[in-house]
Structures are given as structure tokens and as C-alpha cells.
Image 1 (cartoon, rainbow, N blue to C red):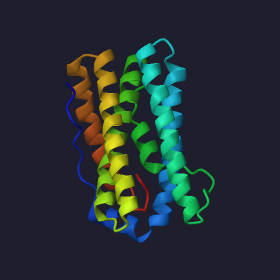
Image 2: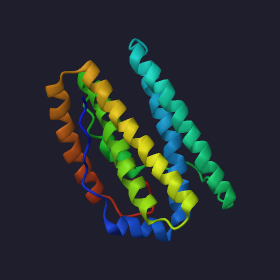
Image 3: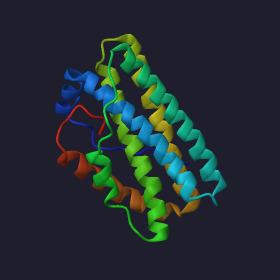
Length: 192
């Protein structure tokens, strides 16, 4: 059985920034759902010889696109428009730590997926617990539950392809890397 990923909670300053600039957060959230779908499909393209991974990533890509569609509807209700894509400082700093060798790269892709989804869960739960709008609160609670399933899926896949010892040893390293990244990027009304 896979363990839960426990990350250092996001700061109150981050939450206050999101709540004060929720439209900006919503726009960034939409971009992240689209990028998550794309990331899942890149794993399909990169590892076509792993049928279990392909099946799970196709399902994940479709689910992330559904979330993208849901967030786009919320944006349209608020007359918000998606700006041109911009680089995600958090994700880029995380990915700069991915190893280059074949096995290390594959394990790191799965574990960065797990850690990024775990951060999404943690942040969506924080946002949901502080929203006054019941519809938005329910939406973000459901998304947090979905993100929890996603980080468990990535961890489960890592355990399918690698030894438990190597997975949990590298996961501990990724949790430390993620904590350093999250502490050192500016506080903005962004998912990451």
C-alpha cells in the first residue's frame, strides 16, 4: 500500500494573496489543468511500451482536460480571458532537479508528478476551506480529492516499476527539494 505524501503546508501569506486576487488564481488554475493534461500525454508518448502507464495517463489526461473545461466555465462566468501561456516558476525549478539517466529520469517523472499533485491537493484544500461561495467551496474540495487520487496514482506507478526502497528514498529527496522550492519562490496568487 502506498503512503500519503505529506508536504509542508503553504503559508498564510500565500492563501491571503489567493483570496485577495481570486480571479488571477482562477486563470492560473486553468493553465495548470491544461499543462497537467499535456504532461500526462507526454508520458504516454515517451513510454508507449508500458501499457499500464499508458492507460492510466490517458485517463488522467482526460480528467485534467475536464477540470480545465470546468475552470474555463468559471472564468467565462466572470468574463475572464486566458492570457498567453507563461512559464511556471515552481514547476521549472522542480524539473531542474530531474536526473538525466534513463531509469532516474523515469522515476523522477513519476515522483515529480506525485509531489506536484500533492501540492495541488494541499492548496486546493486550503482554498476550499476559506471560500464563502458554497459552489466554489464544493468545487475546490472535489478538486482536492481528485489531486489526492492523482498523487497516489503516480506513487503507485513508481512502486510498480521500481523497488519500494528506491521509490521512498527518492521521494524523501523530492519532498525536501519541493519544500526548498516552495519557500524560495515569490508569494503570488498562483496554484504553485
